[in-house]
Image (cartoon, rainbow, N blue to C red):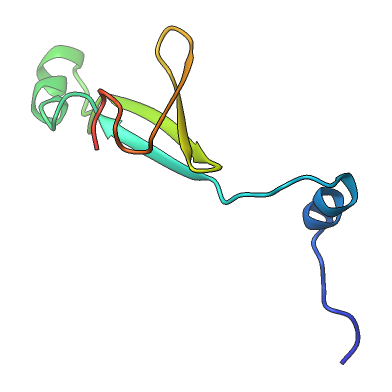
Length: 80
């Protein structure tokens, strides 16, 4: 049997007395799928979207909009 394996990250978090949380990346297409059709004409190459991202950690979404902002996940002006 032996001891259970612990990752180095889990060991450090435990030793420092920190909390851990899963991290989720959210991405939003600001063009609402229009970039797929307009980009070959405007840019001479295919772009699937115009992307904005946010990171969800400890139950809140963090994103950049001139400064780093925080909100309930999926409720930003960029999409759900």
